[in-house]
Amino acid sequence: MSKTSNKALPVVIACIFVQLCMGILYLWSVFRSPVVEFYSWNNASANMVSSYMMMAFMSAHVIGGFIQDKTHPRLVAAAGCCMFCGGIFLTSLLSSANIGLLYLTYCVVGGLGSGFAYVSVVTCIVKWFPHRRGFASGIATAAFGLSTVVFAPLSKWLLGSHTVPQTFRILAAIFFAVSIISCLFIRLPSEEYLSGIKLPAAKIEKAKARDYNPAEMLRTSSFWCIALFAFLSGSTWVILIPLIKDLGVSRGLSEALAVTTVSLTGITNTAGRLIMSNVSDRIGRVRTTVVLSVINTAAAAGLILAGGPLYMIFVLLAAFGYGSGPAITPALMADLFGLKYAGTNMGFISICSGLSSIVFVKLSNALYASTDAYTASFIMAACCVAAPIFIMSVLDRRLKTLKR
Image 1 (cartoon, rainbow, N blue to C red):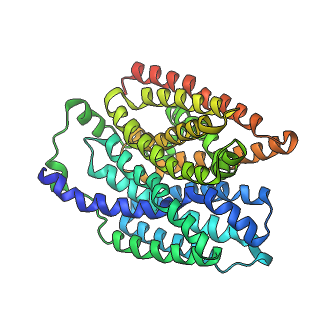
Image 2: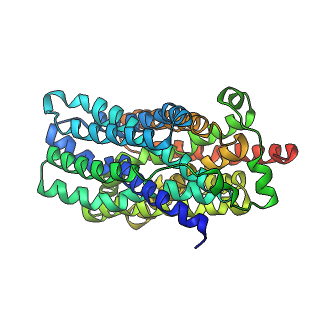
């Protein structure tokens, strides 16, 4: 192992542990039914929880990114971990009479905290690996997806042996202890470290590309192509998140197998982040987004009618596709717009993903109310995730023309 790798390793490990804790964002499909039953809540309201939390999570990227660009990622990550754990703990104090406040405690406070920590960790790791940005963003985001593998079985076990409030308190305590200790090891690379990394000529050119501030970035067509990709490509997954377990049971899976599917999404989500981020280092970020859009389209089309084992396959494919996007975009944004304002600039892409999580779930709920099935929702999703195939192909041709 090289000296530079030795210096980066403690930071990478710390960031991975923070991401593992923050990834509970993806676990609402495990909590949804127990929460609905325990608090006598209605399903339509419960379906919106992951969307509102995702919107808060994504919004935090702009705020947290701006603050960490001005201060230090350790400070913002620690603040985010405290907010996230505090939100989960406050959720445990709710009763059936005020369960609507879950939108504030779990979604807003927890989502903002998770977003603060996430953006700090991702931009920090990318700065440690200027020579392998795709790999770096893949590692940073993979741990977030892997959280489902670790905590879905634990959460299911806790819910089986404890009440819902007790489960939230236990998880909050575990996450707080692990994440705060991990934050102590987060730091930025020194100039001495960066000077010891030898970049290929093409990557030196990218590394020296001028830094766009947010106002300059927002005036480029490249940004809006990436923004549309972020908004549309997540439609299948945000519709699916609160439904994976219950829809799986209705499509022919046993409850145990449906819960297993939730856990396995963490593995394929993580695989997508690692595999596609490394692919992007080899064939280019924009071309990789085109390939990814084809995968997303296949997943959405399959979910229209699939049942039994096929349902599992297409859910896992959707998780693979959704996990890949956030792993590629930080590196793509760094390539096009530089690292100086990376935290803030990435936040604007995250806002687009957050809006997607609300818009498409609301549309899906409306379609379900009129048809009493999710077939129309996945037809809509298939059309949306196919659009970036064209959008990103246009961007690829434009960047070749500009040689950027």
